[in-house]
Amino acid sequence: MLRLRQVAVVAADRDAITARLHDAFGLDVAYHDPHIEQLDLVNAVIPVGDQFLEVIAPTKEGTTADRFRQRQGGDAGYMLIFQTDDHAAHRAAVDQLGVRVVADYSAEGFTNMQLHPADTGGTFFEIDQQEGDDAWHPAGRDWQRAVRTDVVIGITAVMVRCHDPEAVARRWGELLLRTPTTDGAGACHLDTDDAVVHFVPTPPDTREGIEQVTLTAADPDAAGAHVDIAGVRFELA
Image (tube, rainbow, N blue to C red):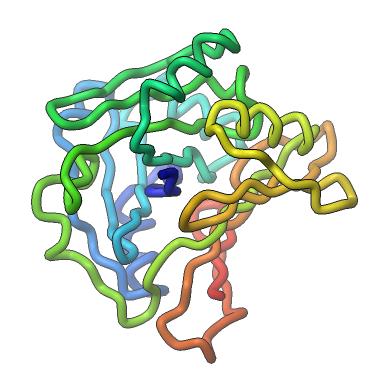
């Protein structure tokens, strides 16, 4: 099993971005993680069906998130979080390929590893394993109370800008244990069990990163609508 479980953006103002996500998609915050405050960060985790958007905001200059935001030129897509049922297999691939693990926030029932984007290409991503069918440690204990599906019901795709999409897709495929597919014109995609990650070309003088997040609309007639929030294009499908 491999799912795209969470997509994070980094922003200067957490509450302003969560308000925009609420206004655009009717989404509510489930959890503010108090543990990341010691990292000079605040966040908001927002259910989209049984997947999640996360807004991360640095409270101090010089943090990893702050430096990432500055390099991107402002608010931006930040991280993709995948859920697996065989974390050990992915960790073996990480170790074999010499990919650096930059953070490990494992907890009881939850196994985590965040990978260095210089070793993966594209953007930050992490691979997690969670015990419990309804549990998701990053979203707190009672995230289900905040689920709102009047407008959107899930996350179906993410588009990642890359200087070399084929190389990035190949490396992600090696780490996620999935085989990417070439789309033509330099683009590739990689399927999870519930979503697809598209790797698209970007010029050498631009930053790699998350370009677009596609959300499943509760009303099919809303497909095609889009809004830009936190430097990311959110599109309905």
